[in-house]
Length: 199
Image (cartoon, rainbow, N blue to C red; front, side):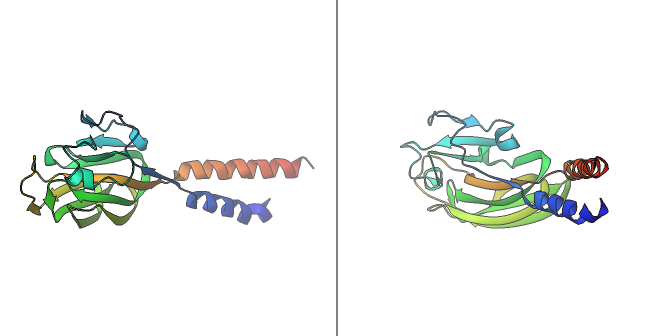
């Protein structure tokens, strides 16, 4: 049985590296482009606080909401320019996301990653008003994100104002829990042991 232990370890390592990568495009939350809704808890396996959904309409086409659309017809944004949060009961890696300033150009967006309530990552990026930009973060093994905004220059002659950002195509990877990997390893070892004793 012990001769097969390296094989068991290899299987567990391969499974640990086989994370579940997803990209959230926010186009499956609602079909109503005119009535803003909140991002529901559970969407993408995450909990959402102070995130709204904005659809592409004629009114918003020439704002950062329209400029921020990468795919489909919807983006999300921080409600009333508040600090917005994303969290999960399972650890994940925050890979990247497209950000745009909704009403401001050169909007500073501070993104912080937390693990068990402790700050482990912090990165500030500058979001353009006129075009969406892909920002890579690669925050590993976190359970929550905090988005806040400051600075920037207001774009004149728009129908609205505020330091909201628009966000689209957020990519993250959920990490298998170590307990689940150990359970798998134990099943493999039991199976190997059973096979050896039944010969």
